[in-house]
Image 1 (spheres, each protein chain N blue to C red):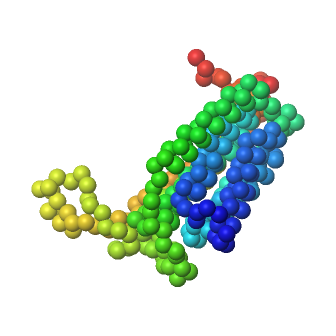
Image 2: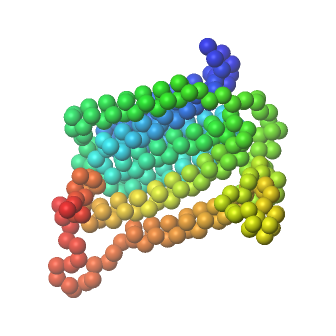
Image 3: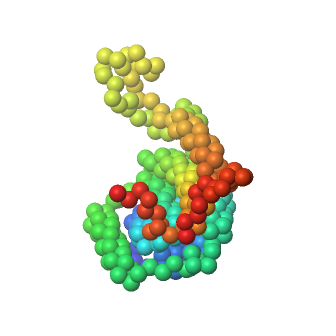
Length: 212
Length: 105
């Protein structure tokens, strides 16, 4: 067995078993811990696939940021009965059957129509180049990605396009900017939603009496 | 081993993550457990994107770009979902999704 196959089976086994543990465990704190190992395993698989930048981003953003957020959410709401909330046996049975059927459908669909791509063994230098290309694609540098046809433009209007309707480089600068603004808006909105509301002093009854 | 590691191996792993996330969303009664299910589904999608980027040279850049977008979107979604959960907890003193039935007709 080659080193790559060994690493794949190790990481895939870790990731899959931890993902199943997230589902099976009834304790929400333990589920957060299993989720940590799942995300770290996915990051390892991304490194194995040669996607160094995406793997590093997965580690930084997911394991370092999102999961800390989830753990804080667990800690802020972990009051006695909510740590272990049981799911009914009937719900478990139905969910397991549906899950296994869904996995069966997906795997049959994958294995009966195999997709053959030429997988070239990538070298270290090529991966470095690939990370550079990734940055160039996000900055819409000319020639970073493959050229694509401009679609949806009538033939007579094509002459007015800057490149006369020829195949042009696909760039991702606009989605990148949209994602940035989206992230900013979402974080402001989250801070607004989660802020503590001061009850107005002196008003009897208060607002939103807690419903237990 | 019978064959080298190919695209199908990664896609099967992505399917495992997807199904685990879907079952997690369906069975957990804790709202944060549901959020964890969403994270699992998004991770399955990330694995698929990067696997296609690795095995199909035509998607070498696109797969990684969209995997990055998925990761950023997941962070945004987790932030807003946790804010909603905390707000719900402040108002109702529970995180059980079965009790969130005020909008039920």
